[in-house]
Image (tube, rainbow over all chains, first blue to last red; front, side, top):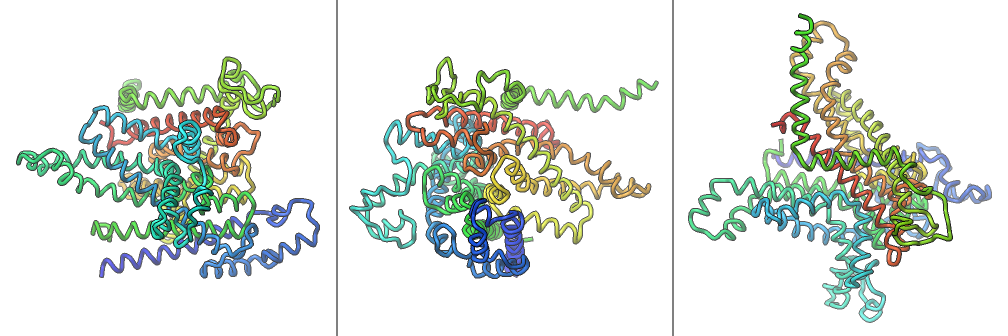
Length: 339
Length: 292
């Protein structure tokens, strides 16, 4: 009962927050810009054209009517028609979002793997070279600008070494020989489902660099947290007991220590999801991937108001849902959180 | 007698200061951070003296020259000296850090102290508003506000400030709630001090050190956000020497003229690194729980 009421409370709070989010997006996009239509069309557009555009966007109506319309639309996930693609914004989002999701999943997978390994190694070999390396890596990992790291990796792995492709999601030649029908919108998954190994390998080669870049900050944080909690766990009595029993070091670390030291790591993984959405905006721009981040950025640069408000609201919705899931998982893991 | 009293009251403060300085000297990483930030400040202040060329003036006869003795970091597609642009970029970065820190701290502190001190309905409303701003990934909200205001440096500063105040609001609120219930506040209240007086003279001074720690820790993030906006074309506009804009300038020339994007990026990473190290150090020095 306690648990159910906790979740209900969280969901109600989330709905209130989302209504507020809608208000912020409305105020920023409709009230602050002095003359949005003028900005879209430029200063020299004829009056009739400006008027037609204003009517098309519904900006000629009273602001209160616009607001109610906006909120009603948002509830139905109807954000209007994009000015650039001439399609409903939600259709666009459904096409672009899986690309971002796929990148985020691969990124978090890479950062959990490398982060946990680095963290465990630097705790076990404390103050040895691997620990120093991990420390320096973490400090730089959170200091380097994402977009610049991306460019540098393209320069090295594409420009100099030629090992990996530089930008885009797939190779046109591969697409011509082994066409892929879109099922989920995620190329890796689609090619797996269709058993199209050429396309899978190609998509994998294209996603590896952006995923590393996107996951870099998360890797650094996960490595630090895992190290700290691993050090805590290694000091416990039951670890000494396990060692005293004569168990191999590897077994003590992997079976006894790692499992308990991962609890704080799980917490951090949930929290880094937001930074992934944020990083996706930059990573997708640098690597020319047609994801939601790039859709919003191009919308902002081209003053595509429906696309921008829709995209931003959608990202906020996903972000809030992710936080809700994290909260619920905590509540399951740690009953003290429910109060 | 009087001077004796004075030393008596001053002594704990002096000891405290000495201990803080000791902690500062003891941590190598904090020292490294301080040196980096010191350098950054010096470069920003003396930029016109250090930079050998104008950061904006074009010289098409000197396009795309590689790094060398004439141009340490090479030149870009318009023949501008990258070194001079990076040096002048430090001024832009410092200006952004300064303004964003001041604005977001001011908004956050006011919201936080009002929320924590008065509690009740006011607290509930203010905290829900804070939640709403936290419901966006911060870069996405900053991009959105900056673009809607019109992309330029001033609007980028406003956007980053509007995104960043929530941290301070939550921090100051927590402090205010803690301080509010302390006996000395009750004593001051019973003497008849007004609410404003209590807040300004007795609650806010207690929040200064956590705010300072948070400010230092956030400065790296501010540079990264500003540079990201500049890179995406939603912040400072060319030809302004802003580091994100500089990295973006070199994107099209990355394969053959790698230096255009590389050096400004190193400058960003270097300064952010400095602020992160310094921030960790300041936290360790000022946080009573970590002072040992």
